Image (cartoon, rainbow, N blue to C red; front, side, top):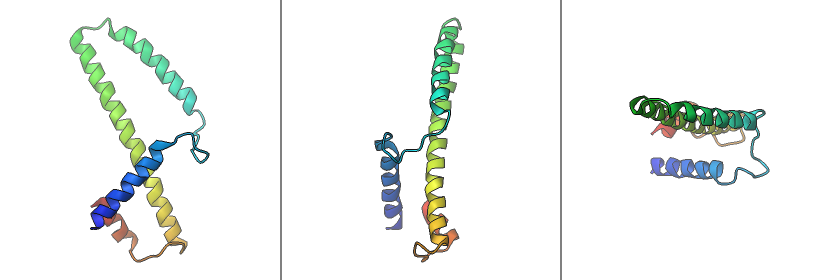
Length: 112
């Protein structure tokens, strides 16, 4: 039963994170848009250079880039969820949330 609850909480948090990135409460990180544009420009240059490589080398680089994108996505999701966990622990430590569970038990249940 507990796993179902945490699964539902995780799905809700993911929807909240992904659904409306233009909402008033969305976080803006200074320099993000500029970095995103720079990466896109470099991607275009790299694609041009990659066209000159043999197919095997080009395929290896494409696989590496795909893995990096997947890893970046997972790191972002991990940081996002860690922020929620930290917020819950902060609110709990301030006595604003019930403390039926110890911090250790809370983390154990999240990881199940």
